[in-house]
Length: 322
Image 1 (tube, one colour):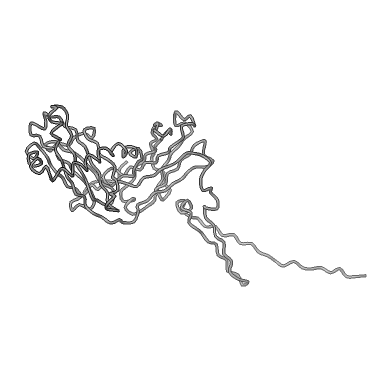
Image 2 (cartoon, rainbow, N blue to C red; image 1 turned 90 degrees about the horizontal axis):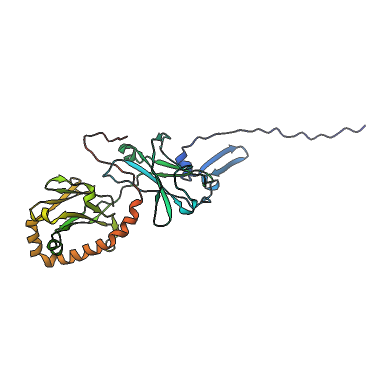
């Protein structure tokens, strides 16, 4: 009788290790490595969201997040642009939500769709946060859900590293004489030039009283072609010929973080008009530049629909708003 030969199978083991990571790190496509040490050697395996999530979803929906402004409430806004051919006339099926880095949901207000010149519909989700969280470079996440998306779109935003700072030069010009001759409305021009970073603020006063924002328009900051890294902007205030001729003063207040006291102001009135005329030759080039800015201003309005995560430096006050 022949003995049956048997081959014993080696005894094997299985070990499972679980790692919990923040969602923002996963969405940022950070690489995580699992390392195993064994007497037979060291083994490593890498994983990241880049191998799991398609680079671009199969839809034309786009999501935009814009860096913050330090001159407004810390309101963060997520804008979703949807192609017009989707036939979206309301926000049914669309949801936009904000959360902070710790995963805490923020109360989000969703606006009604707005038609854009490029044929898309834009919807914005607005939420408020604390300035301290932004200053500490915590991340905020916007999540967009829509029936045309194969999966939720998630984007994060946080404060960038410190940038070079340079205070703006501010120039205020009186209304053009050609406007005043018509005895109707005239324009006071405020030029803000040579500042960095791009975040700034403009407000107008009339004889020391704050004017409503519908009295003036302010352009978005635009890069200076001759000075890379610096920006310029302008603000146009509409005044009546009667107010100007009566001696009312008009003040352009400019806020920027590089200014010694965060704000500076320039005032113009009928009495300074004579000084401007006496220096007409010196102002001629400035008015030429101003005219160019006025022509370019409508182009800058195209970008005004994009939105910003804002903050305010209100010394002595509560820096966290609902």
